[in-house]
Length: 197
Image (cartoon, rainbow, N blue to C red):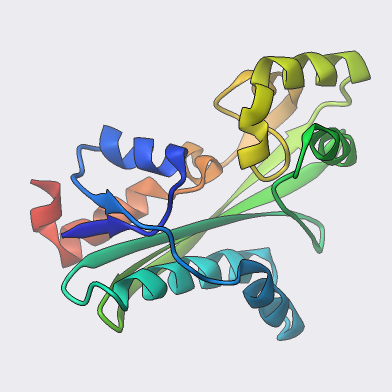
């Protein structure tokens, strides 16, 4: 049995498109507390993404000992600053304005757990540079995106109209969407080839 420890529609769609059969369950963890402890211990956005992926997988695996559990999480770092999902449209405007004309990094962590064993984990990073867009361009994109941007760190979705706000994107597409799919599929081939049949 394969379980995705997430309710992310994007991650679910990626796994479905890859032909995997799985169920989903939300992990009950305090993400901000874990983030703070990782940062206080000297960690950065990569460390936080990996830690959250591992803890999500562990939280669900604890209740499903025989299952193989996928945990995943993503962080956005602008220098040493970490951004989170905006709470509302005003928050999305503020985040986009903060990122405008700058380069930021998306870190996507993924982990496989079975029972209390961490079988594998990985973190990938993509680098994105936003254009120096106008307020009108920003507002047009947000109107086109609607509420969907509130589920995305940074206040944008690269798979949607938000792509108009970018100058360059460097990195794996799946990492940008929040799930390093190719490394995950390689790990499944190694640890649970039956999940790919």
